[in-house]
Length: 319
Ligand code: TXA
Ligand code: MG
Image 1 (cartoon, rainbow, N blue to C red):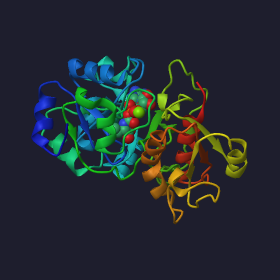
Image 2 (cartoon, rainbow, N blue to C red):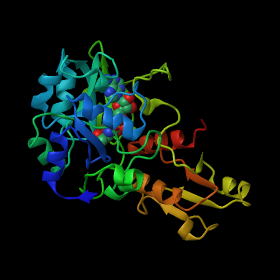
Image 3 (cartoon, rainbow, N blue to C red):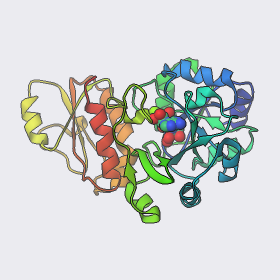
């Protein structure tokens, strides 16, 4: 049930249940990070493979010491700079973190989310919240309480309504090797903003897909059920698919070749942050239109445009 009642969420979480929570990025499916009962419920409801670890949401950076150790100086600097906010840090874990959270790894992913309701919720709890995005494994992440309800219906008794997510795409994930920051997943904090503070980021390569460092890096992910094409030549693909029922996902301008009702424009004034915020909701709407195919265009490859392109590329990858 969708509710704004914080106490309903507190009670459910204290009873080792799970609750959908709003964050500035996407909605999360949250449970007590120290309770294996709650953690199992998260994996079950999402149908998430156990090899895929969860992000732990803290109420403030002061809780870092409770869950992580050997924290590199650059990680502290990033936390000070960007928390609360859409940045997740992968750090050496302390033993208080259950194996279910870390998928047996010796690291834990942590962040302080920037949403007033969820910060208020965390302040009322004696434990941090483990929370993956609140979608079934492999589907599009939810950016409204209604998206979450559509996915889980009566199987989720509390969906805490915090409105539309302000960033609209998952957090950026950074790990560390020899004190050097490494990008694990593109997200709503741009590479440029991070590099402004700490210099050049290394990109994680040689990804082993059977045990990915961050399965946000699995090639197929975040996908609509409708087959999705991703192109730098929209008009050509429109011509090629002329016999089919298709919809368009575009940056700022409508195409003349289709009714506007079959087109999603992410930012009429060409703002990449606004486009990122609207991306998943647009994908959800197109996915509900019973189309044969969704055709998405390349975004400018800078700032959050890189993140949008990354998500669209994954959405369009065949299994
Ligand atoms: O914005 C977000 O990050 C949202 C909100 C709810 O906070 N959460 C989210 O969680 O996107 P999820 O589970 O959908 O994605 C978490 C990513 C996965 O790709 C997972 O593999 C990676 O974080 N991850 C978690 N723990 C990790 C670890 N110890 N090492 C490497 N990657 C890790
Ligand atoms: Mg996810």
